[in-house]
Image 1 (cartoon, rainbow, N blue to C red):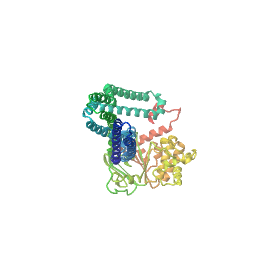
Image 2 (image 1 turned 30 degrees about the vertical axis):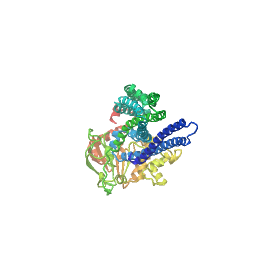
Image 3 (image 1 turned 90 degrees about the horizontal axis):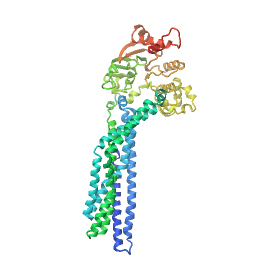
Image 4 (image 1 turned 60 degrees about the vertical axis):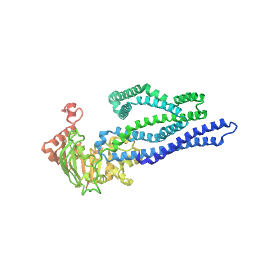
Length: 583
């Protein structure tokens, strides 16, 4: 709250003034009644004006306090979300994946919103919860100490009962928040996986998890309500204004009847007791808000303390060329996971095309993602242009590396905006040229609004192949010396695949290209093929040489040829189950 602390304190001062003006209103009312009793034939206009001024001042200052606290809350909400986004942009992808998109979304949205509510609503409550009771009790002691102690006894009794009801509040609040998070995650999973749900299990499995999350949530709420039960409800009754007023009214009646208390003082005590008793509700609301926001603050602080990738001091080093070299690199995704890469060393010369192949889970995509430093290696070094990527600033590194992911991602914007992402100064002619090179121009022009067509959330309005070609156009437009393609032709149909590869070959001349490939026919002419198996680099060379060696690559190539030659119902073919397992 440090960035808005000054504004919050200002709001609290205004709220305190509002509380004092409210007590002054009660005091002027008592004086008005006293004046009317003493001189019933004269209107105490000055005192009545004081009542009016204090009442209006109470309303205006309370409104001003809420305005200031809400302005501060909006500012803090923006600041925190910007800081969280900046932090997440500097942590490793490993941290992002371990936390999960749902949990991080909840922190940025729900937890920050909870802090917004706390700052906006609790600031004025502080004065009502502390200033009003303290000042009112002091005035009550001055007016009549017996009635003051009677009013205090009711409040002490109410808080004692409430304390019993709140003994396990921390544990129950944690269980409650955990149950809510599970419900939110189950809802997101059920909605996002609807096509799969309808195709395979008609919702039984996923809806079952959602139902289980709801049942757990209900059980937590029921347990919380049952354990707090009578003490919580009874404490709210005791701390309401009525019991305090009833006791003070009865005791005051006795004292006035015995001529031991001035009736006007008794009336002033009744008015002040109302203000003090009404302040108890804000105090309980404030306690509830503090307990509720503690968990949100802890989660925000946890994300803000997430370890970021180290940044070199000063200007950092810059690549000398477009070469890439791995030196004895080992890497694992988690502390207890097996190594995804183990002692991997190779060199990619500038201006050459290198293909990464191997069975699923061999480490190909891991190699590709270590180049732009999405993670840091456990052992060894990754060098770009002769410089360790850990000794480069992120901006310098990414100015040299363009990346096309296997899993495409498009923003809910126009096609043109998605293509020029990372190159905001690109003109329309450049965007069209990149789209033509990526074989995307024709289908774009067939859309109702051409390049101004909105692609929807995550590019939902485009097919998988169309999304892939838009991301390729994006990488081509960036024109960076090193281009990493993680199965860039995965969704290209047979008609466009050859043209796409040909276009990439022409446009990538002079660039260093590292391509993760499963379609081995697309990388036959690569300058270098690196073969991975279970995290180890087992073979390296050109296509013809690797086929002759009869190793892992030769086996992959043979399986690929069998899969390509398969035809439905072709005589002499192996049974379908055998052919599928071979491919």
